[in-house]
Image: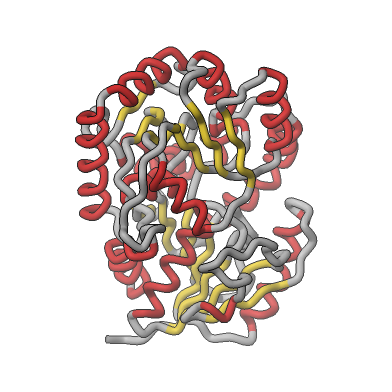
Length: 376
């Protein structure tokens, strides 16, 4: 087997919790397990402050690959520009066989570097679903020309552009034409989704689970509307983000005692929540290949989501889960009630989702395809 020297570039990497950071971590670990020399270039982070009985304080030395961090400002756009500049200087001193960039976008390295870029979403598609009533979306709108410049540079200069769904590919093709696009779905290593109890069994509790960022397009507002209607059902919302305080205030103002917002929690606690929940709810207005849905599939949870972006490529309606139009609160209320009452339906959907995940969305399958592209 030919050993490759592979460099992955991303400002997003653990312990910053996001789908993209989970993808990069999983891919790099699998590549290193196969004997390749792997290095991740990322930004600085603040140490995580929670330590559970089975977790240690976060440490980059835990990996079987090298992690190099560059000290950058925390301000969006400026961080990307600063990171791009520092990484560019570093790459001049190295000789990698493959340089692999990931969105959120940075500027491509200058010089003769041949690189691949993975587009985890399309700016055009994301902006089309943005609600401009909050500061986070307004920032996206004003920064859009510069972000679009980043995206254009990456797509046009990359040797190959990897899309995490056919929906991403379609959106990018409408903007950039017949570029060399390849679809490679995100993948997970099932062995990293370990059971949280030693007896491998966790008692189910009567709650609906959401995990993800607290931003407009994820549909948190719809979850609160649903919870107001279904006051006899509990909802647990795991995650954080720029709009966490806003949605927390909204929950308190509505008096939703059946909603728990945990904020940032450890990986151990996250897996515990997945194992305890009866239903996984992901009412997003746009996503391409969300890792939270893949996690729910592998962990055999019945999934209720929306028929947007790349989600219908993961889930077929009433086969591996339930899909409804985004914003259709009435439909979500109906399906939550039915799923809570129908244990056999929950079991059938969850089993089919797990089988499909193990067949089509493993990290092994993802890396097999990436290596084919790298060696080209």
